[in-house]
Length: 436
Image (cartoon, rainbow, N blue to C red; front, side, top):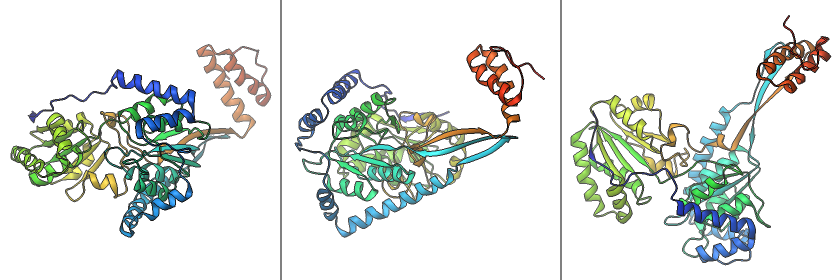
């Protein structure tokens, strides 16, 4: 039976605080009514940036790209190549389909890219330029026709590295806008920004709530919460690597859960001590330490099956497996955003460079969805055709009777008229087609 050696002090909530919802509703309404003028007012208010146009010029974009060192550009291009290659491989698995299910009856589906996508790249505490690869680039691989992107200024200036990443990923329009005003401008549209059909990308609680409130008017990728990490480990690894990987994700924010599930009490207790040691030297200890104190957990289990059960219950965004047999967990786990198998890899590789997408389900949403991938930017749309009179009459007769079972006479007449025209049968108006 599992037991906690450390319990989180603060429970993770799944609801948005009412004050956040109310504030976001007001901001969305302000942009809906005021358009570009409201976007400018909010950008000045929240980001201290006043521009006649928040869309970056070609010269500004070129300047941001030119500001990269040779090594920075090479590293960015390497990361984007890995993400592009994996996204393309995923896209290649999604085949259009056409099949003759009955003589003369053809059914099919096509994968159609979303036409207009808006990608948000956060840049508050950290300029998360990797989010440009994960959203903009993936949408372009999907074949989306217009991909626009917003990122806030960083320390009062254009976030040059983010802009460079957005451009290299293939963005069609780049805006220096942050927060709710960016989401509103993309999702609602203004006089100068054509509204998108889908929003993607992570952000703070206000950005996430703006996406949630706009869902339905536009599509979104995921409902996002704080970054989460779960490490599953046994005594095949040591406490230093476990503690490093827990704190590496805890530094995202003071409300980021970091959990260790293990069957080794020795490793569990040594990890507690190692976390204390690392927090004394980690530059981001102010954030990571608060996250560990409030949201950190260590769960001791008796068996591998119990470790699987605990991990599936938690349904974490990131699940890192460092055990003697990582594939056991690949075969048995069902609830996770992404798996990182073995001590040689880790969540930071997935966040930045290895090629899988880092926009993943949080707040236990991994129970019912995976993360952002090329398929999220595609609509799988079905079609049908009937090739023969005989098939139209045969399907029509059964359809007529099924419609009457539900009381839909008008539906039945759609079937009946085809039975009359293509089957040569004299069916009374409003009646079900007799069997035989």
